[in-house]
Image 1 (cartoon, rainbow, N blue to C red):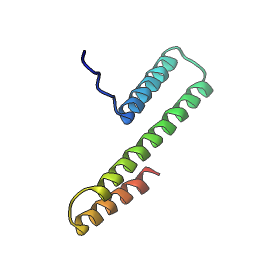
Image 2: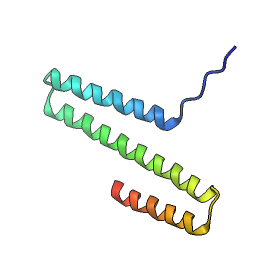
Image 3: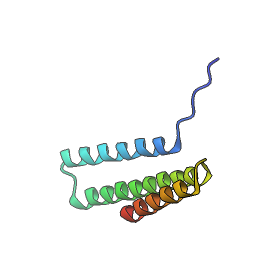
Image 4: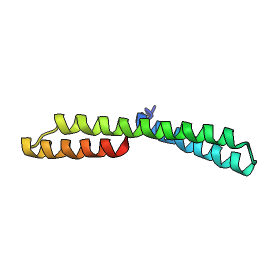
Length: 88
């Protein structure tokens, strides 16, 4: 029997965000109230921020634990830090 591959957490999170966005699209088509739509958009935004932080966290772990010169690791870490400030 074949084992199913585990889907990465970030991919699951992204699929959930896509579902939320499809829900917002349906709300717009159904002419739901502005308040309801804004609430859902705020939830999507929060989910995107969480996903972004998780991706950066994973990148930084790889950067610090990976092989390579100290200079290269330092450059990679600076890039990650810069990306983090763009995200927030």
